[in-house]
Image (cartoon, rainbow, N blue to C red; front, side, top):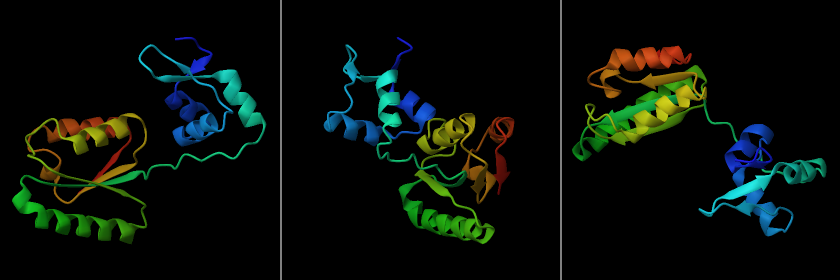
Amino acid sequence: MDPLLLTAHQIRERYGLHRNTLYKWEKQGLLHPIRTPGGRRRYRKEEIERLLSLGLEVSPVKPKPRTVLYAQVSTRKQEAFLKNQIARLEAFAKAQGWTYEVVAEVASGVNENRRGLIKILNRAKNGELERVVVEYEDRLARFGLGYIRRFLNAFGVDWWS
């Protein structure tokens, strides 16, 4: 890809601009993205920098909470337990003074393709997490918990249970 053309993700990382700001500027006729053959937008670096130099109002990127509360149950029949689990985790996090995001899911602890777990691992890998809080260790995984703990620790993520 041409280094002078940037994706919305690259613009967010470099300049802190939200995708919605880019869309707003496009609707106002201030920004003219180039479309790839697949229809994806690419933005000219010099055009972004020109607009930023004009001091236009931008929508800031909200930082995600660096604490994730993870709650999990295996079946839909256990949803009441899930709500109670979330309430206890939230009470604990509030007592610590943490801002947090709740990741809750109904899925088997043996399932390796749980969206919530994958989200946590990706956020850890991207340096977006400080801590993961679970009520019981087995909520995160039935098997291989040591691997998950080592993975999180490798990226500086604390583990609370």
